[in-house]
Image (spheres, rainbow, N blue to C red):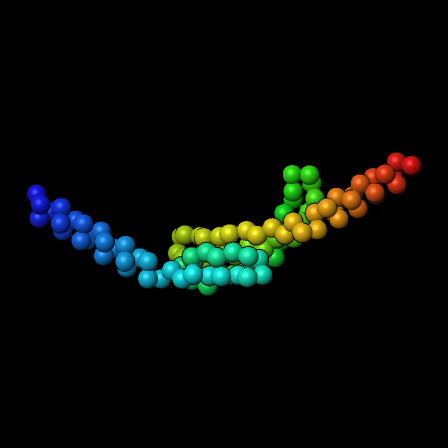
Length: 96
């Protein structure tokens, strides 16, 4: 029984080491994040609708490996106050 446990533990540790070899750390200083991906990510520009209905700029960083997809979405909230003020001003001028 001990031999089986030792062989199983050794096999499991080798599988973990082998699967971790393809992963690399990706750092994006502009968007301010660090993540491990199984390859270099593809960046797609998109928009994200906030909980208040504002369209915010966003980027999706993704890697596809076989049937698996890994992704992180970064949403730029820096101009959210300006966008909300513009929308409020447009609503106010349309009701007057």
